[in-house]
Image 1 (tube, rainbow, N blue to C red):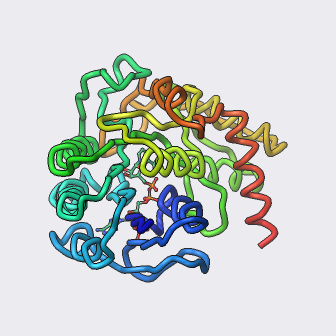
Image 2 (spheres, protein in one colour):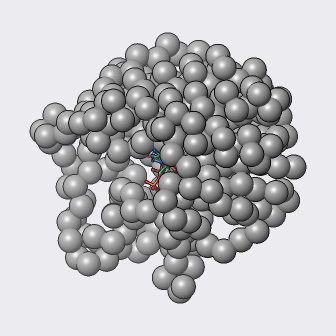
Image 3 (tube, rainbow, N blue to C red):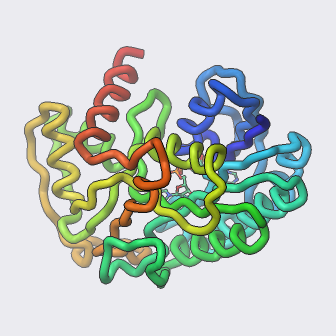
Length: 299
Ligand SMILES: NC(=O)c1ccc[n+]([C@@H]2O[C@H](COP(=O)([O-])OP(=O)(O)OC[C@H]3O[C@@H](n4cnc5c(N)ncnc54)[C@H](OP(=O)(O)O)[C@@H]3O)[C@@H](O)[C@H]2O)c1
């Protein structure tokens, strides 16, 4: 099958390309040069924010299925430049959805727990979004663009994505490992409740959703454990056998441009019932993260 992945240089997209390459003809759509390890995929540099490049790439490839994982994910960057956030997160989703409609392709568009205000999480799929801030608002609008314009579409929400694979970008989890390894303290928000999602687990759930189900509408494909970020950092430290200071901080005490949902987290019961690839518990996910990190250190 011809499967395209946007955001291919990103955390979730990169793992999805590696996974899908095993059985399918894959077009990896990224920004700038390819930063993926060598594989059987084709690669195209296309801008989600320019209104046409990604749509043209998907049409040229005659995609039969698309995993849309590309997005402007810098939450404070979106707040600084809401125009660009809109172009990429809404306009990009629009491009992808229009191409899927024209091609009769199935679409899974990846989204976020930030569509919720974080007053009463964890949230199930039926909960009413109330996005706050430019990233959250543009991701929510991108969900609607995908659901409205692509007839065969699922929106898959994830949260706090992290990966230890070689080449994956830095995240909170990798910073915890790196800082504690250097003997530096780590600050962590004690009042942000989240559903950390190992990119590889998110990739396997969204790939299965795309190619092995006909599910339409919203579904939560995050990790299975909701916990605060201090607990998350402590569990990372424990799994890696690292000592050191993890300092709890309150979100309100740190100057951040964009609002953060506090009591967020996603209820993943629907994905657990529907998919063979289950949302991983934090302990199982950290075992895999540790294995990825070991391969990265050995590379
Ligand atoms: N990361 C998280 O904690 C998190 C949490 C909840 C939901 N999500 C959602 O999960 C999905 C996957 O994100 P991720 O975690 O894999 O984040 P990521 O690593 O930041 O990946 C996003 C990718 O989109 C690409 N991109 C940004 N602007 C672009 C543009 N104008 N044109 C083309 N590509 C562009 C980025 O390119 P560069 O590599 O060149 O920057 C990056 O590779 C996104 O929909 C995101 O909103 C992420």
